[in-house]
Image (tube, rainbow, N blue to C red; front, top):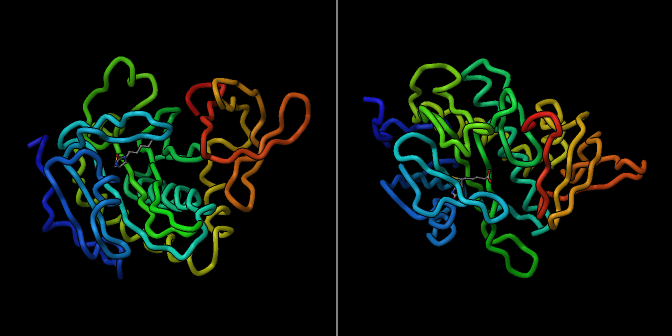
Length: 263
Ligand code: BTN
């Protein structure tokens, strides 16, 4: 019962195009790679019960415990410049955070740029990739890994990861989360396309666990201590360094660490 597989018949979001076509596999290397390599339409969703080579940000591995988490990628064809592709991570972060808050009534937050956290522990990670030609995004793939029914984590992950099961002591139906997520994501994606990133950033700031915190920016093995005070209009993190100068941080190659706990 605990390890029930996803029943694709129960995935029926009330959306116009997000999740109109859904591919659900028992196993794949990475749903992001699958979405990248499969000819598809705007909004198609790819899900797997487990991944043999799940990818995290900055070349890290994403552990994909069988039938426990949600490993899902959305393929999108936005008419945007390649420089803007990371903004989709913020759109996704807002959508996942709002979905989890609505369904679980718990204080989930977004750790800039791509983690959904609660009480200093990560419950979801987001990885955005693109197929780019001449500075245009031909296809963007936004993947999410949500820890849902995971009962425990390895010693290494325990300190920084949690799951919806650990938080609530109840098993969740992954189909229900996917349905509501697809609806909320569609609303926010349309807001991004029709109104622009500014409206998303306003929402992001309200949900942010990073703003008004001391942080450490880790880039090329160098640690910069700073205070995060805002998100720029392009979605970059704005920090004040110890010498008083301001730094605008793009999500590309940096990792941000809160100095008090994982946030
Ligand atoms: C991170 O926190 O570093 C990002 C993790 C993203 C994991 C998801 S799981 C579904 C999709 N497929 C992948 O290979 N990665 C993303």
